[in-house]
Amino acid sequence: MRNEMMDQPVIATDVLKFMRMQPLPLSPQLERIEQEATTRRIPIVPRETAVYLYQLVQQRQPQRILEVGTAIGFSAALFVEASQRRAQVTTIDRFPNFYEQAQANWATLGYQREIELLIGDAAEVLPTLTGPYQLIFLDAAKAQYIKFLPEALRLLAPTGTLLIDDVLQGGSVFAADSTIRHRNKGIHRNLNRLFDSVYQDPRLLVSMLPLGDGLLQITWRDSIEAATSQHA
Ligand SMILES: C[S@@+](CC[C@H](N)C(=O)[O-])C[C@H]1O[C@@H](n2cnc3c(N)ncnc32)[C@H](O)[C@@H]1O
Image 1 (tube, protein in one colour):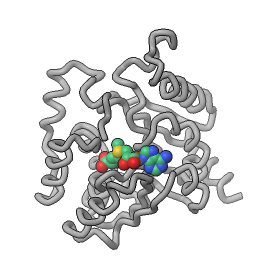
Image 2 (image 1 turned 180 degrees about the vertical axis):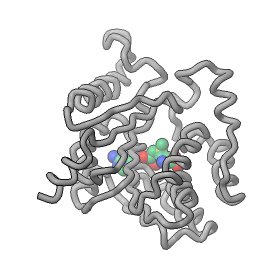
Image 3 (image 1 turned 120 degrees about the vertical axis):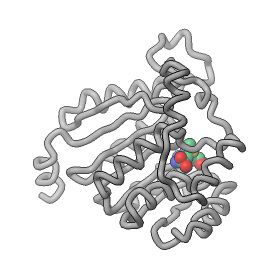
Image 4 (image 1 turned 90 degrees about the vertical axis):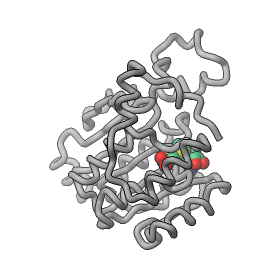
């Protein structure tokens, strides 16, 4: 499984090179999992995104984290380490080839109690969950983010953060539709629909971070009002 956007940085390559060498205080076992994924070209979050996620979790100390897109379990384990094992992580994936490896990796790290894997399509699993989650990380099929959005917002805590990964299509997401390759048109259109939805939603504050292939960060504009309406 390859992510063709992995090698199309949206920032200058020497800046990217620097960001990919940033240190991260991972356990040696998790560092090995990151290296193995990079060697085998399994699409885990790149180092610059991992550093940001680690810092965010360490600072915000979310109690409950929801992830869509487990792959071999790297980012789920990173959340556990960044929270010093205080966070409970629920992660969803639909691709059977990775389940066993993710679970073996968490067993090596001793994180089986901190991470719960839900198997299935997130479009079907998300409606079955109960929030709130203080951090939600969408890192899966990009064309489906627009479908996941209402459920992610339903599950997001009033002071929570929703992160949506890989939204820039190697920087081509704003190009005219006629210039986009046929097989990417669906992704391209749905990412633009996603931007329209979140940037036009008066309840949300949205920030585009040029990490990896673009990380969209969403919070409630008025977290007190969101808390009131969620509990009304
Ligand atoms: C980029 S990888 C996740 C990487 C992982 N978050 C990490 O950084 O270690 C994307 C994963 O999303 C899963 N996926 C894609 N669409 C999905 C969907 N609709 N429901 C559940 N999982 C999905 C794929 O099977 C794949 O394992």
